[in-house]
Length: 559
Image (cartoon, rainbow, N blue to C red; front, side, top):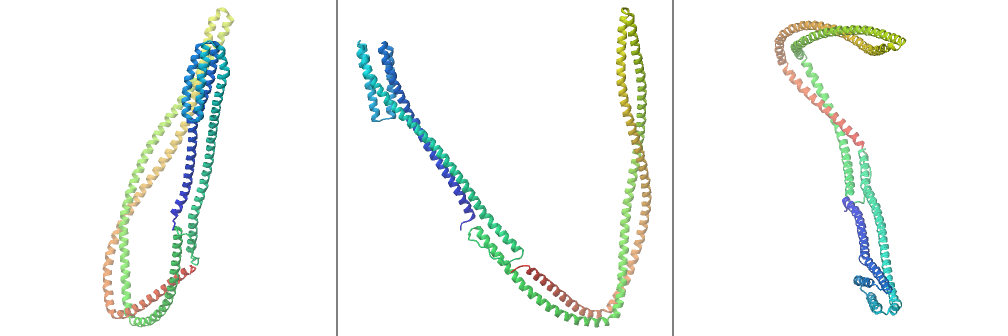
């Protein structure tokens, strides 16, 4: 049996296997690319460089030999020797990198070529045989050098082609790796989605089917076929459990229906028998009742009187208790009323104090308004004086201009006086605007204070009225408290009298009950039988009704 846990783990293992395969392929491709790159760096590239160095060395030494023959300087010969030594190092590297027969033959030919230059060119030129040296250089040395250069050029070309080939291989491997990675990644995503959808469906569909099946069972339909599944995991166990539960419910409902029918039939029979016994018991009870009418009438009268007195006593006792409670509560109300009256009187005192303060504030603001009007009058006087001063200054300026040179000093003074008058007029205008603003604000404050004063007076009157009302209430409550105390005392005396009367009536009832005890015992037996049969009848009816309800509930199920 494969569980849901195993299926889920299997799906994830498949996805992990694909991811692992992708990792292995990428690692292998990277390993191959690293190997090819290492081969290029460690073998092909050094061989290419060495071949190029040897090729250039041979070309340079050929040129040095020709220059030596042309100019005869020893420097060329020394440079030739230095290049030969450098070439020996390159040859060692070449033999190390490419140990083969062709390499050894090429190295031997280089050595022979060097010896030919030493013996057949440099020595002959040093001995004075320049023509033979030139002849050997042109006909022997240079052809062999060109052949060696061609050999190493072929080697360089081969290595360059190898490097290009390895580079293309690395690029192709990278492209292939990328394609494979993308393919495996897409495959992993697709398979992961497929696994996720499959697992979601494998979990959700059975649960939805079970929920729908249970909903049908909850509606009372037990005729549904059993749920079928080929799964052997937890879903199969769930299906089997639901089928088992449905079958058990069906069996239980059928058994309850059978028992309900039996109970209904037996309750009908029991009701019929109980009714017959009850009729006989009622006839016996009627006969016994006729024998005990007189005694019962007497006992009943005494009992009724006793009950009446008991009720009266209870009513009087309750009234007495309520009177006591009312007295206590009225005392509390009286205390609260007195406290409220004190609070009202305190509020009246505070409102009167506020009224006095508001009156003082109104008076002060009225004085402020009066002073601001006086300031306005003074400002008007100053403004008139400034206007007259300005006019006098203007007249003085006109007189000074008419006088001429002699009146220049007077004209300056008149001009300064005019400026001063203008400044005074400007200041007066500013003061006038400020005083107007102060008057406006003062008038608004006066109106607000008058309104506040009116409200305070109204509140004071209202609180005074409330205080008088509290005083009247306090007096009324005091009268009520006194009346309640009187009523409570009267009720206490009535309670004591009813207790005495109740005791006497109880003694009379006891004597009457003892006289009719024998008759009542006989009637009681008959009544007890009748009562028992009535209870049996009622229980059988209730049982029949319960079985009917049970049958109706069972019919809600479809079996």
